[in-house]
Structures are given as structure tokens and as C-alpha cells.
Length: 417
Image (cartoon, rainbow, N blue to C red):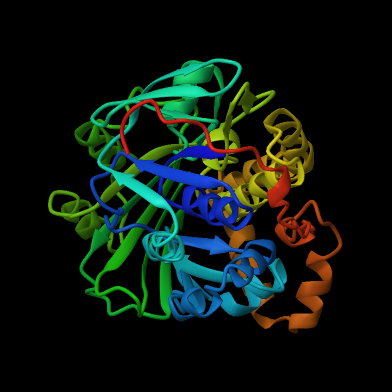
């Protein structure tokens, strides 16, 4: 079967890897002209995703690229006393197996694991999709039309495939009360294994570095009672809103605001969940943030994307290429994980960006307690509920065996190599 995947960031290459392993023939199309290396930010892989990474044979590369953040200093607006947090202890309470890695590094590792066996088309995007009983005719913005058996959108929160097949994003997007921004800055504080966070009521700013990058990242989170009037591509307006949200903040924030004018990489978006009754229609389905984003930075979306791509490929193999059966099975298997990730993200957004002085104080006390309590105690407390901080480790992965005799023959291309 010929399967087109839109998006070459995280879910797309993982899906391509496992589809190829199961005997399918994936093609990945990516709008960007090359693999994205635009600064990126740190993302988390928890135990199930780490298990998949190991099965892909890239565990050593992922571990070599981990950020190495071991400690965090929490400063509070209007409070002199700082709180030092042991990040290792904190993450041990969350997951038995965890790596924090820069998103661009992870994307590159997954691409490298597939580039010799999978066709990648950079600098192009899907323009239209026309489905019939036997396949999907695809036109592209630049390349020649082609025909595929299936099309899968792995193209992120603002998915082009979702828009073409299911309709405008506003039908499915649910704003959960906060915004996220990330910029690349010079590592003038010489941070490598250390992150520094300034917390205030309704806003948080942080700076961190990594041994894998020469510069540093500044991260901003701020609450908003309503969704702001800004397009996700309007960078000038986004920077204006960020400056307004952090007006009057001390510490390094004034310098960080000055860096907005010269940063080589800037990311800004609402923390939004995707809520769809089904993320499949006919021969088209969605995976990762395109179909079920729980919210960037707060819901473990990277781990969810890796697991979702693995399950989708496995269910297609288990169904012998029967896409209707496979898509339904995939949605059933992921439904509870997706639902709990959404709930987790809602709670995390509230806690990471405190809404009152008391909540800010409580956040500091939690950080202090985790850092001084024995690891066994903090881990035992966290394990009391798989719906809480150990959500991701509670997901069990199936072993999917390749069934090549059940896979249908490739579709005939309608032009183009």
C-alpha cells in the first residue's frame, strides 16, 4: 500500500518508520524546504515513547542528545527567597523512564532513522484531496499529482490535512486559558544543566540551556481570560502581545524583551486542545497534534504523538491494510490516553501559571518538597493515581507483528515519480 504522510516533524517520521517495518510504502511530504532547524524547544519523552525509541534502534542517539537539565531555580515576583528544585527527583516522580530533548534534535534523529528507506518530499504541501472507493488522488502545491491508498495528516496543531478534509480549525480547537512563547537567545547566563524560572501571578518566564546547543532558550507562559485576536502567523502582533503580558516584570525579563527584536527563532501560540469525535474519515486519518493535541507544553503531546504514530502503524498491519478497521481500532486504543492527556493538560496549565499569590506559593512548596523528600516517597505518592502525574507511564504498548501477505498491492500513481 502507498501511504502519504503530511508532516516531517515527530509523528510523521515515527509513523513512516513503523509503516515501512510493517511492509507498507510511505511517502512523507513536508512544507518546509528542509528539515526544520529553527531553534526548537525542549520536549519530554516518557516511558512508552522511550520504549518505542528503543525498538526503533535510536535510543543511544536520543540519550546522547538529552538536555541534561538537573536543577531549576524558582524566583517569585515580589519574594526575595528563591527555591532550588532537583529536576531529576521531580521527573523521577513523574516517570520511570524519561528524557528531555530539544525538539529539533528529536526530529532529526527520527528522520535519520527513515531517510534511507522512506521517500521524503520537502518544500511542498498538499493542495487538494479527492477520494474514491480505491484510493485518494492528491494534488500538490508544486509537485505533480499522485495517487495513494491512504493519506495521514501528521502536520501539527494547525493541520492542513485536517482543514482540507474536516473543515476549519475553529470547529475543533478549544482554548484552555494560556499562551506559550519560545525564543532563542545567547546563553549569556552560561546555563547548561540549570534552568531559572521567574514566576508571577498569571505569568512565568524561564531561561535554560543545554550541552547540545550553543545558545539558550527563553520560555514564556501567560494566562489570558479569553482567546486573543492574533493569527498564528502574525509574528509582529505576537511579539506585541508578549511584551504587554510581561510589562513591569523584573529579573532578566527586560533584556529578554529586547531580544525579541533580534532572535533568530520565535514561536508563539495559544495553548489549545484539539477535540474531535473522530479523527478519521474515509481513507484519511490524523495522528499526533493534528488529531488530538492535548495542548503544547502542558499535556505531554510529544510522547502522545510518538505512541499514536506507533499504534496507527501497528493497527494497519494487524488489519492487513483494511483502513476502516485499523482506523477504528486505533481510535479505540488511544481514546482513553487522549482523554486523560486533555484532563492532565488542563490541570497543568493552571498549576504552571498560578492564578493567585497562594497558588504561586503552593507551587514553590511543591518544588521544595519534591527536592528534599526521598525518591521512593515522592514516587509512591505520584503512583497513587495513574490519572495524575504518572499518566504517561500507565499506557501499555502492544507488540505488532508484520503481516505482509495481508497487505494489498501498491496503488498506481497518477503522474510523478
